[in-house]
Image (cartoon, rainbow, N blue to C red; front, side, top):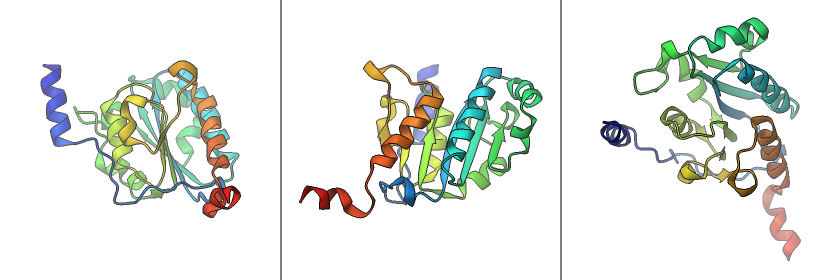
Length: 194
């Protein structure tokens, strides 16, 4: 049964990245908009999301986030602790009520998020999950970063921990910025070699 469902989803929504926008490697100084997708599983996810937003915000680059609730009522518990997350206009929150049976977010709720072209898109989902693969595919990004090497074709770059262990999300976003800062702007790498 699961194989039949997986086959149906792959035929209906093939998970190859939308490359209407050619991939570009940007230096941190050239990034004008960051997009990210995050999965809320528990109250601890709220703490992590808050730290991720602070880390991205510390770069002084505008951002947009798509936050999906994977465990019913987890978001309500988080909003009690962090009411400002619900008021953050840069975050689009999709609760379980606004997911189709296949896990695809409601078009009306997610349209604003998908309307932007991101210079850097970060997917914080570390497990194989159709809805996050779909979001990564739909997001118009010039450079995308993922946590899973099993979905290499979706990303420009995949970051994993040592010996393929998973990095925690806050360390992961710090590593993304570390690597993006290392990219030289405008072909400076080539000039240094010659």
